[in-house]
Image (cartoon, rainbow, N blue to C red; front, side):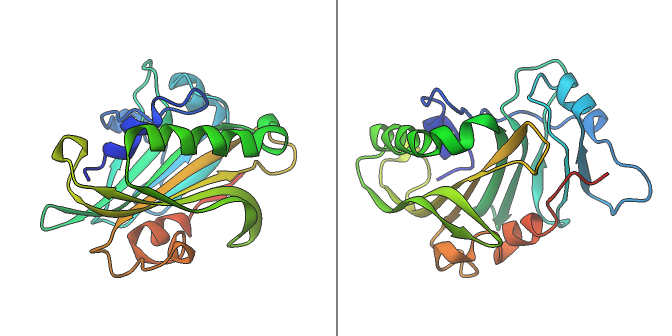
Length: 214
């Protein structure tokens, strides 16, 4: 499955669509004191991107490709990180917007909509978990599925893990983020859903994610 396949299937879900966008170097707000390959998201940059206001920073390894929003465009992701080896897709992480007020009241509904949208796109799909439980250092609403892609029109054939997490905002902030991790079974670093956010290249990325960095 290519890096846009899950993005396109989630686009049918009213609550969150993840359209790929081209990188614009002018959108990198990176003071010299920060590590290289660091994205700083502020309310001001969100306004440029026509996205809900949120404040965080995140970094990525040199061998991970990043897709960033474009100023003035209709963007759904704050960032998308993709790792390939020898042109083959291994894993990716998308960080999209999530209105904070909807998490507690509508978290279960959002997961149902996402699951239904995926089933409409992929006939061979297994839901491993849907609900709220511990992920890393917090309890969040999450969806864990396994997708089997055989039709090349849907992407590169293979077996994929997909983890969707609704990460609520910190106290006092209006909006959070919606994260989508995905990996193909060739990715030995991610052999279980518990590995998302911890192992692999996307784990390296997520470990740097920090809300309210200022």
